Image (cartoon, rainbow, N blue to C red; front, top):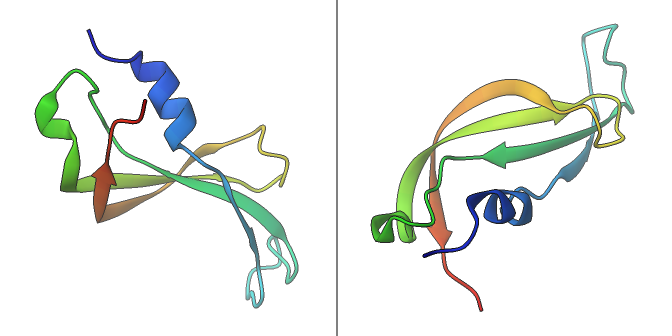
Amino acid sequence: MGPDPLRILILEDVPMDAELIESNFPQLPKGTKVKFMLTFDFDPNDPDSYGNRTRQVAAFADFSGTGNFFFPFLNEGLLMTNVRLRD
């Protein structure tokens, strides 16, 4: 039996910090701090899920900047991933 899928998703989804440099939207002024993460479907029990693959990716955003309020933001489309099993 492979690793627990929830454990893998938590380890692989690493939030990234971003700061708006320029904005035309009053609701998102220049200097707003945003956290975002890219996610994709992965089945650790399927050997074909590992290695270099092109996957559908979605972006989640947290405009509070705390990392506690992520919500689906954009369907990013295709992205190349390379998933490897670690001990």
